[in-house]
Length: 212
Image 1 (cartoon, rainbow, N blue to C red):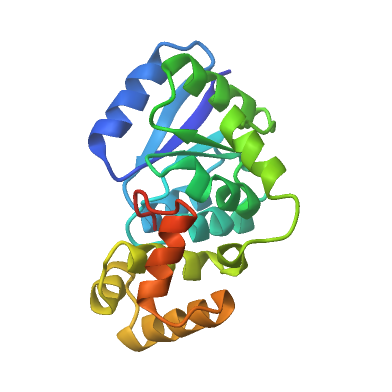
Image 2 (image 1 turned 135 degrees about the vertical axis):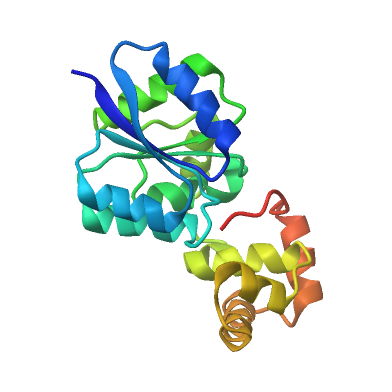
């Protein structure tokens, strides 16, 4: 019996590529697709899945928040992240949220299939780079590690130059809520303002593709 996979990714071309890749395997089958966070949750609720292949940039929900919501609905459902976001920025947070692994879009096809099989079997899949990250974060937390997933999401957008109104529109929040989050971010990181946030991001190599 094949493992039924739900592809949760807003990009049709990525879903098509994964669908073609999975079609070559004998033990995996794409049984459903979702293009946003709401549809993903709806599909998780209505049937059992062997694996959710999830992007972090799903419209309508923070990708990290979506992992937590999926695990709250179905604690035993394996979630594997497959995303363009840099591993060093989001892999640890995704795994802490409940994902069984994190794959970059740069992964080769054999690695993707291997990771899907491992995750579907309930085993964690991490690249050597993520393994190093896990080891390096075993000690004291850095200031940005103190941020919640929502705060980190907003922090990432701020340091990439997004305005508060842009962030509010993108995340379906009020400007006041985003402004409050920004104040909490500055307090937790003991920084004075946006310039220092950007300087911190540069110093810690946190500038990369923005994730939800």
